[in-house]
Image 1 (cartoon, rainbow, N blue to C red):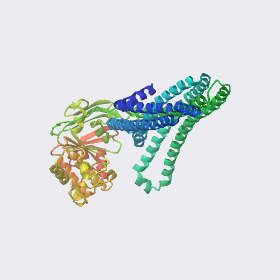
Image 2: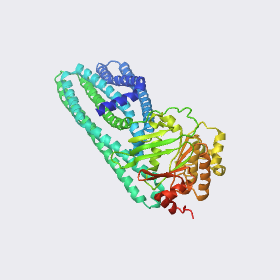
Image 3: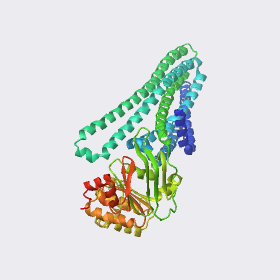
Image 4: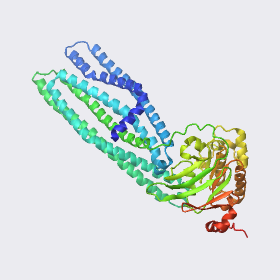
Length: 575
């Protein structure tokens, strides 16, 4: 059952902190028991007053009980809160670890803002499960039992009235708690959706500004925020119902006990001091009853959060990549044989019986119109996705038989949008090869024509490039991404539209870079600009998920109509 699985997840998070949980629980219980003695000590004070005995001893005892209970309770609370922070830390670290190991296909279905909400707000709710939930509820149960025992010693009939109240409260709470659980789950989903909507806006911030769409997007985010508010209000409503039910029941019990107890005092069946002590215990019950209701409510919230965290924990993850070790330096060859692929059962087929080879060394290009399936070739090579049929081999070995870390360590991959991370230029360059030396960095900077950029930046390689590399131009980001891939000394360099953001001068320079790199390793490049790949050793022409032709630039101009049409639109036909 989902609830059982959620509890197992919570227990797994708290297990390393079980000693702190036990210590905090015991201290809280001792503090509560010290409070439980106060009504009895108050009875002693009243009796001493009535018998005209010295009040010094009873008052000092009462004061000591107050101070001791407060000190021990505060210490217990600190221990529990500290443990709670440890639980949140463990949960966040585990969740981030799981997220970064998920299959790309799973992450593509999720929304970044919702994932962020699960790591931040959902994990925070876990703390309250044990600090305000389990421990407080157990402590409240002990306090209730202790108070009931003391009431039984003082007067049986009044105890029956009190027990009727406890049964009434328990019935009301049992009816309300499932609604609190459902409302809390819906509230957390709504917060995640709001985060996803806001993330979408921030990712396209300039487009929103340029499109004059601020008001529309503000309204969209506002609608998501309103939904989150409404769900939160629903949680508050049911929580309030539970709390007020407990409070009203306690007040009705007080009235009943006061009436019946007053009659018993008048008849001489009960001492006044005993009635006062009993009423104090009754008042004392209000706190643990409210505490217990609050604790169960927090557990419902925490279980709802654990359920959302568990959804991520149960998603299929990639095999542990681990350390790749030495992967060799010889250029790698690639072969696709009868590969068929679609991104999902409800999605159209992207590859239909795709077959081609990439010889080890030199440059091979993939060209064709948009939607031909070129970028999918890279996604399958990196094993971001698994093909439905056919075989993909590197060096004659099925990529499914390669250790994932070793396979990816053999590749240098430059994505189409050439992402640059927030941080320094150096951190971006060595991201895929953190142990690389200064000489290698200088070599690659020269190779990718980035030396001028480094000289121009105020702090050189240590200059912060901003979120998504906003301080760099599109062409500079592309060259940084290429330099990052080259520093890995790949056996196969995958370039997806490597020249899409370069001007004519820099494109020419990059073509020279690619040609030079191709002398040392295998280069597989996707290009819409045919001028980038006219000198390629082999060009694979793709259309509608199929390979329609393979050859050199001149061979394809003679033999393939689509390639000839692409060349003509880019003014590359020979005159």
